[in-house]
Image (cartoon, rainbow, N blue to C red):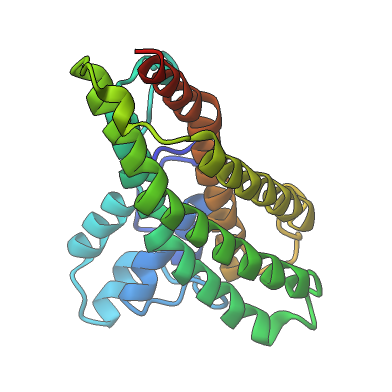
Length: 251
């Protein structure tokens, strides 16, 4: 995904795996896949660690590079100038797909970590409860958009582009379903603010292990994704949709 997080570029992977993860949390999933310990005791450099486990160092490095490749959108991009159907597809394939792929696994990892670390980090109780609520809310919100809101906006936009004389027959009242979407967005906003508060702006305690640092970084990535999705919908897509609806109704 396109990210706003500050991450140091790694050019030398033959260093302790714990250090690699500290430099870029996204490498943690690769080490999990290869069953390489990056948390407590992950002080062995990657090359000798791979040799000791009869693993292909170059292959592991290739996967690490793929996992840390950034997708960046220029600040010069004006989302408001995007065509409506393209904007919807962007939200679905960049933001909704990200949530579908990442959130369940992140929630599971957080729950598992909390089972054995709540005594040391009591904030995990509130954090797991919040992510449980956020997960349910976001999944419902995105499904509502995918199945009802977005298809309707695309239908309107198609009639608008073709300048159909009877385009107003396609129009139902969008403001009513949008009212429910906006209500969901406000609830998501509140949960996201709570996430920042509990994690102290995504700053892990000084004494945490690498596993907790990775979880905090992934939560921050989740936060940034949802903030961007909320912005695109609230400030760009929905105003466009309402304007198109009004245009069709006046024909």
